[in-house]
Image: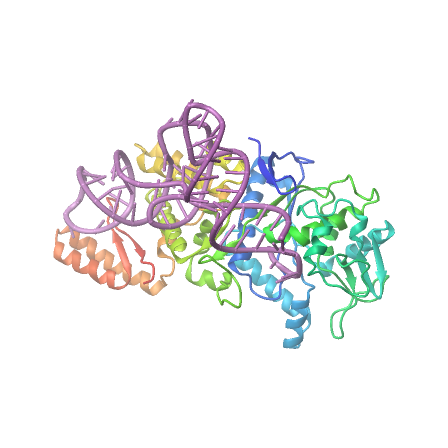
Length: 465
RNA sequence: GGCCUGAUGGCGGAGCGGUGACGCAGCGGAUUGCAAAUCCGUGAAGCCGGGUUCGACUCCCGGUCAGGCCUCCA
């Protein structure tokens, strides 16, 4: 099965051919760790997690190197550290850990590499030096600026010309810049900020250089796939290309930086842009207290990654209901053995078509129906295996089905429910329907819904109870 | 102003130049002590205006609306 992906550089869906099938390289821009991640930040994480899983499925578990950086040098980090009177690593370690925990709750696998700016300062300084040596950057007043005019390929990714950018003219004009659109590779630190040594004086790296330096140092050019949010196309990824290629001794004009570019669409909140001023920023850290991580994950995968996604209460409710259905089916076959199975070709085909998760999800429903309509346990066991295997590529349905419905119930409640259920089972055995209904009502008041089945009752905690 | 997306049923959301997935909700039936689940069936859509075509939701052109980027941003 051949993977096809929509490449931002050519704006076309193309067949994916890895440079080296035994070492696929994937890089996705990660978080700046000064605060909590919001739900919009989670979309690329989940989307590219599916890509990571798919690539591992197609090329082998050990043949994919997935790097997602952690930006731990940044103005916002400095500000937070200053305000709290601590070193920056107190802030960055704390939020990097929280980030990883929160993303794990969304079912995202840990990337192979999580390079940090502070751990790659040598690579950054070296890359800047290479760019300067190759004549694509200049030092001025403690700054090092990338000379945009020296790189002919500039603007190829974002499809904009340097002239257009000047026309837009919101770029910062500074005395140390030759041209307004030149951007910073290295700059002096302000008093009190962390400082690193460099040939151009003490200071700190600019925003874009970290990614290209870490890619060069950790993955090697060209990487296979570079991913990120749509908003990063310009200037971040455009600048990455310029830096990454101009640091190469070939001057990189014909070389490639990333063989394929993938960008996820934006997420809106009730059709509005998420912004602090509107007060509609949803933090993943808060959201997972009210909504299971898997619901969030499925909701994020319910639309194609390149399209927009509107985050609403209705979306969450519908997604939860859908997952209830899937886990409900799995609960019916929970006592059947788990056997190995191949990922359904239809699911693979959908994902290989530029990560068409909605189509893959539709197939998941079909696989669930196979379980429901199976006539015997052998068929059911095979169908269960097929559903779980398909779920695994999507990072879904790997939890315990019973636990799914009881999530949120503490031990006390569970014991209480089990007790009442036993009483009710006895009442039903005696065909004492009024008593059975009384207990059902009592459970209902506890927020518990009882479902009878030939093999005994099951229950679930009602949402919002 | 420049560049880039998107617009499908009550809601979410795909594919496809000719029979309109899938999910949630609705309706009918089967099943069920009750309830749920499940299965079967069913109603329901393609922003507007042109064009191409035997035929367009699907291709082309022009609008409209919404969102994004051009400044830190997933």
